[in-house]
Image (tube, rainbow, N blue to C red; front, side):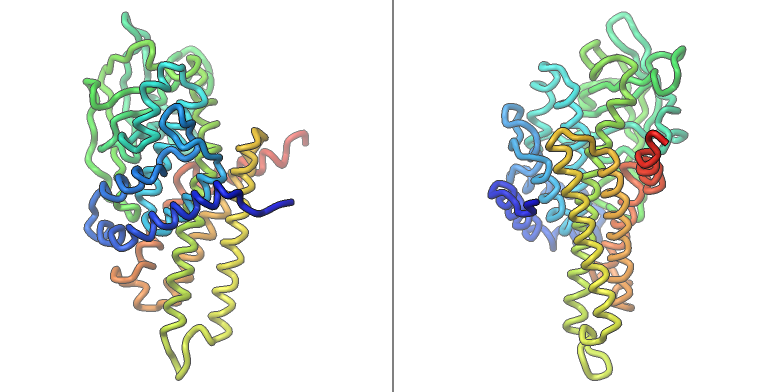
Length: 382
């Protein structure tokens, strides 16, 4: 078993590490100001980080998903908000088009998304349909010239800035809920009948704005349908598997950043005549966090490798996402505790990392849902 990275993977990792370091101070300032990180996104687009595992023929870099995971582990250390928006472009919208789109859809939508020239969003969740998306109420009815879309989505990351959207809607009221949903691709900037709600006031991820999207009789052409009609939920859940690997990678990055901040503080802070880092109790905390983050990294890279090999990885992705996000939260919590009162101040990074880490336990499927996926895999054939 070879755990070494290929030269290409190492190159991507180093590129992402350098790109993250350049924007670290800017990211902290933008978070305090609650501003959209446009400059960071543009900088990462210039580095080719938006389309890492998307094909070159559609504007991507043609790398594997392991390389993408490695990059997110670096980027999320500097700006989790920007990493999340890049992730939506790449692993939900971009991968969805790549796997299920027609040649025409790929040629039209993929290049600007893969190159970071346009943001995309993924509109699945609704006010009454979160962990159970089969109960969504947004509907797309067949019209004289295609489809007519009506309904509301919420918690849409990048919805206020996105040009493109992937939207889930019910297309057959007479079928079972999980067999009556379709996915649609749309150009938000050139479509009438779309209303963008106000930006949500969130606990963390201040740069990755979340809004509601309302669709009031939106006319969509037949070519807006992604994949086969009434098969959209299956496609969306398939995309979520890959997205959870990316979510796990971002969590590893957040956790590593928390550990680094705690370690640096403990080295420089003295109590009772010696640096904090010399106290055994604190050393054990740091050792536990380092061990957890290493395990989270390995789980994540294994899931990414399985995806690259075309092997089943749903349970592996759920394990990686659950463990990595829980570990990141623990790292942020323990790191803040190590800094004591300073960790509670916005002048120090741990406060932001603590807020951002919490979101990882919720988005891409809550960790309670991850446990259900893992358990379902364990109980196959029982």
